[in-house]
Every structure is written in structure tokens, then in C-alpha cells.
Image 1: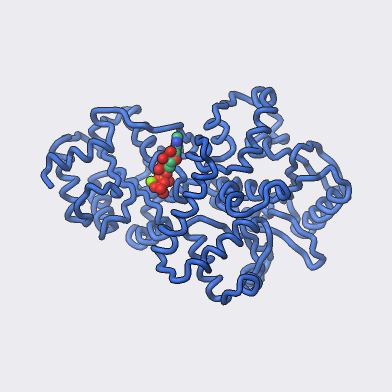
Image 2: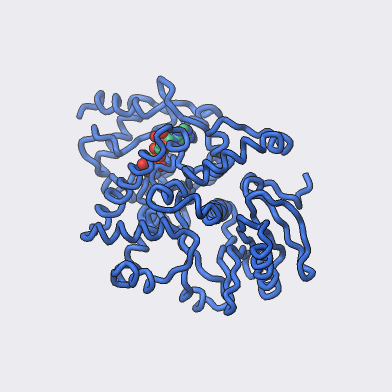
Length: 442
Ligand SMILES: Nc1ncnc2c1ncn2[C@@H]1O[C@H](COP(=O)(O)OP(=O)(O)OP(=O)(O)O)[C@@H](O)[C@H]1O
Ligand SMILES: [Mg+2]
């Protein structure tokens, strides 16, 4: 391939002479990337398939050019481009030299390498570029764990990771055309917001799905791609039916407790297979597992686990019965929001709690050695027996764990009540997701 041809391809991915489609800004991620770019570290962007990683990368590159960095100082390459004839470090070097020759950037250069795992030996090249301070580097790929593991060994302590999840509810509102200026605005638009929350629970939070009219078809497509490309091929799985059965089991049993042994029995698989496959599903961000809180680490590890899905829309298309179980989907959404919070609060650990009398609390939020908050997700709190059960568990756990505060997330009920001298707040899910908090008093 001649240099002219090469630069022709690169032009398609870059802002040098034209504008590119960048979609709706994901401000929270852009702020973090900006902050990270100011440190002298390699930045990795990881996350589930179709979460919007490539779009965010492009938005970050565009933001640089809007804040004083020359357009010619930014190079974006997507290595999934089928026009690239070979993918190795020699090729990378040639690509970089061609860029320097044609664009002649002065000063700091920024390299955004998308799907970088396609390039054989990329880690060494990235490290070399970083060490010689030739460029600031942002790399991304859907092979998340591998990406950070490979880089981790080569760049110990010299890289930062941003995990991109699907749309938060706030982002989802923006994608739906609703921007909230302040809290008053939020209250005024309450009815619209509640309607959209139902959609959020039902169709999930993939950016493209939220903008599309063909939600179900798209989700089924994503599901197939995930299974065939990310799982079967990558992990060389020979029994696709077993894997599919396990995925369907997890996605339709969100927010329930299970052990590998119990699943193995019910799906007629070996426990070892269930354990191995579960690890893969976690690696591609399809599901997350939550462990039981215990002061003893060993017990924590042995405990049954609760499973959550990357997306409630995906759960719904593969067999979850939405109408009967909105409460469990709500719990899934709360879990995902806590995951987002963890990205900003690395100290935050999340567990569920259960005692010998089968009293349960959905989420225990721990910081260091301290349990800060307990959260119960309770959809039909207006039923007296439900309320009684849920609050009794909360009060019990508050005493046992010396928790700072307790919260019940509801569909619509809002109050502050005292049970056995413990104060418990009730907040509707939509308000909680939008970061509204009574205690702020703002
Ligand atoms: N910020 C956005 N604004 C508008 N649409 C978006 C945005 N982010 C993602 N999308 C839509 O979602 C699709 C997937 O986004 P993108 O390609 O960025 O995801 P990705 O995480 O890079 O996926 P993959 O793992 O397949 O590479 C896009 O083609 C676009 O339709
Ligand atoms: Mg991508």
C-alpha cells in the first residue's frame, strides 16, 4: 500500500479536513478522559460491546481540537478497518511515520488507537511511544480484560482505565431529547421522566437501541454477535448450546441468588463448565456477580452470588418476563448505577446481605472498613406486608453492620420514616437515578 493510499484511509477517521459524526456528548466520560489526559499515563477505554466506546473516543478527540490542540496533532486509527493489509508493529510504525510526514504536527501529539488488540505486538509499541514521550496515547478495544491485562504487565502503574457502561438514566433522558437544567425542571417534567423510566427498564440502555425504532431486532442482533463473536470464537467454545442455555438462565434470573452447583443441576451441565463459562460472561461484561457481605473474606467468597445483567433490554428479549418482574429489573438498574458510582469512587465496595433467618438487604455499600449505606429496592412498598418485611430486614442489618444510613428505592413512594429508632428514607427510583437526594437540601 502506498503512502498516498494509507493517508487516504486515515483521513476517513480524522478531523483534519472535515467534520465527523460524533453523536450526543457523553459528558461524564469526557470529563474523566480530559482529567486523565492531563496526567502522563496511557489511557485505556474498555467496556461492553456497542456501549459507545468508539463514539466517546471520537468525542474526546474532537474536544481536544476545540480546546486549542491543532487538528493535525490528533491521529485516530480504527484497526478494524478492513482496508489495512497487515496489522503488526512494523505496519504501525509506517502508519505513524506517514502521518508525521503528511500532517507535520508541531508540539504534543495525541494518538487514539481503537480496537488496538487487532495489532500483533501493539503493547510494546504503545509502551515505546509512551516511554520516549512521543505521544499521549488513548487505546480502546472490546477485548477489555485482555487489553488491560496485557497493558498492565507492560505498563504497571502507568495506565489508567475508563470503563464505559451503557447509558445512565440521565444520559438516556438526553438521548431522548430531555435536558434538565435544575431540580425544578426535573419536578416539572416528572410525568415525562417517569414514562421514560419505564422505557429504560423495558428496552435497556444501549445508545443505538435507545435511538432506534427497531429496538427488539437490534437487541437480538447484539445478542447473536455477542455470543458468536465475543464468546464462541474468542474462547473457542465447542458446545454453543450449553453456553446459550447458561446466558439465557442468567439474563432471565437477574437479581436472584444462585450457586454454580444449583445451576449445573438445573441445566444439566457440570459445575466446572458453569464456573468456566460464567468467568467468560463476566469478562465480556455480559453479566456481573454480587457477593454476600461478611466480615470474613472466606465466607464472602464461598457465598451464593446474585447475578445482574449488563442491560435490562437484553434480559427482556431473551426471556425475562418484564410485566411480572419490574421490581427485579429496577434492582438491576440500581446495581448498574452503583457500578457507575464505583468508577468514580474506587474505594466503594458493594455486596448484598442475608442472615440465617433469610432476611435480606439488596445492597450494602462499604467504604474501607465502614458500611456507609444500605439500599433496598422495593417496588410494591404500598403493600403493608411487603413494607414490613423489607424494613425489618433493613433495621436488622443496620444494627448488625453499624450502617450509616438506610434507603428504600421505590416505584413512586417518597417519605422519611422511623422504625425501631432507625430512620429510613424512601425515594422513587427516577429521583435516585438522577442524583436527587433529600439530604442535600439543595
Ligand atoms: N454518543 C452517541 N450518540 C449517538 N449515537 C451513539 C453514541 N454512542 C453510540 N451510539 C450508537 O451506538 C453504536 C455503537 O457505538 P460505538 O461504535 O461507539 O460502540 P463501541 O463500544 O465502540 O462498540 P464495539 O464494541 O462494537 O466497537 C453507534 O454506531 C451509534 O449508532
Ligand atoms: Mg468500537
